[in-house]
Length: 121
Image 1 (tube, rainbow, N blue to C red):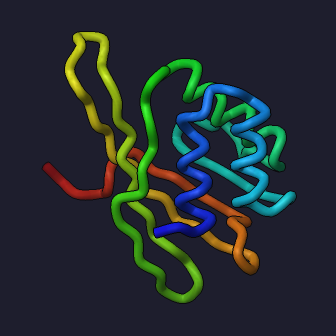
Image 2 (cartoon, rainbow, N blue to C red; image 1 turned 90 degrees about the vertical axis):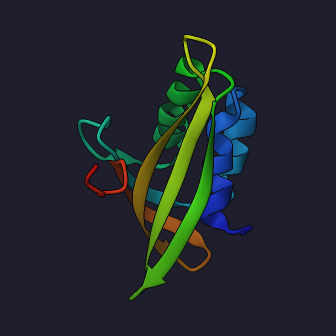
């Protein structure tokens, strides 16, 4: 899968702010709106989104975000993302997140993320 959603999540592992900005800029609209459980309010615009994603790479060096599943209904795409890397104990860890994505043309215009996939354990 090589689309704007995958491109956006590929940016999460880029520590260099300018390189990350280039990747994000190629995947989202200028008026992007982004929310997840760690955003107290909506992140608006590419610069703010780049700064937010940069916090992930700074706080979890070596970790990546990879789209592992997606489907689309009525112009909304549901995406499951695996965030993974070495944990503090030296073992590989993976955390899943689920996102609901709206696009404007070939770019992400709105994204809302949730911890986990909504499945009960």
